[in-house]
Length: 565
Image 1 (spheres, rainbow, N blue to C red):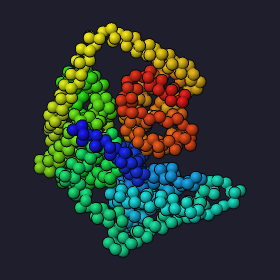
Image 2 (cartoon, rainbow, N blue to C red):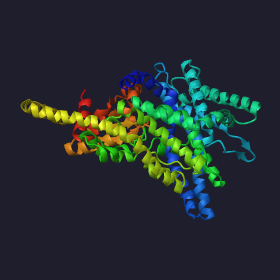
Image 3 (spheres, helix red, strand yellow):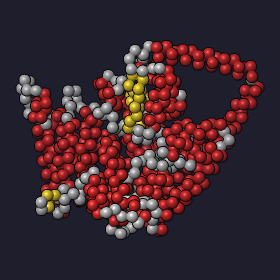
Image 4 (spheres, helix red, strand yellow):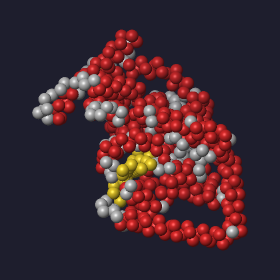
């Protein structure tokens, strides 16, 4: 097993390169930017539809208003994502552009939105149809964004623009600079629209969904969902944030299927589409990637080693809210041969069990989008419409996951216990030597504490720190530790947590950015931005990050030492 793990680890640079692909990143970041809209709309859809499960129906005027809010938010999410994806891709593209050649991200966003409308919307009497402006139009949104940004890139590189005299104000000059790339982008969408409509008689958005439908159908099968969530766990096991690689490839279909399921239920039919956002958040990655919800409880209840009991105690609350980095890096589970099989197997078994309940037993699949940090039992029950079968399924998942993880946890616990007992034996045999070493360690700690104190004394102005991770969950742990440490040490440090990809507009307001381990592979990308803005950038490793989250004083010392470099 160790040999297999070492061979897998050799591929880590390749996997990191995939995760840094600017197009995959643009899809992920574009969705992340639009997520407030999606979550906002979910509140209204829950209020509108969930009471129906208990036999309560709102009056028509209230129901219509609730559905109106949902329609004007989630119903146009395709249009919004066309803009946010183009903007995020532009930011990434500008990093590789020649010096003094910058693409206007606001202009690409607008051009992408216009292009999306051309590719997705059908004209009808008195206006236009909105059928493909929501999740059904997401594929068209990505196409529009990618084509638009690349046309802008070509025009900017080749200086295809209207140049104004230097006396003309910059804002006006920029407007004329963007006329050609904007026009060419829109013209490209017009050509695509004309070609598709003359060939198949439908909009591009509808045509591409029909074309990819066999692939979506295959992905909705047992093999498809097993590969998707197995791959997600595999990448994370290697140390690369798996969802960053896998989710962009399925983003369009998992949200479109949620909307389709809701339409089916409203029509009195069975919500049968399994491949949804909820399947990942509350089943495949229940408690975080690897379906680790049960693991901290196993450590607390069954472990005999001090290490695993401590890890279980520290990680049980975060894991309940799908933040499992304290578990992954502290146990550790990442690249640990003892956990290779259960970490990959458990999510696969979970999604297959869910599909069985939907296909065979007749339970409805996910029809609502909920925040990813919703505790998995609640997310599964709410997202599928409060059915009794959802409660039964959750109980089955917990039992099955416990059975899968238990023997591997026990084997690792036995190994750690042997190591701990051996260490105790050595300490007893070499008591004098241990005392001397303890004094040395104590002296070193005192020196480090004094150095940290001296560093704190040198802080002349406030330091504003932004901690970034993949979903703003893990980053909050260090941000909170920094706030606590700064208060205890009376050091002028303030901190905020954020998600990588939603930092572009706010990063200029910070003095330092810290990358959590899960987004460490983006260091070189963001370094170009931080250097340009004069911001200090620091990356952390797994065990180091978890240690800093648990020791506020050390977290403060880490920030001060990095600023002082």
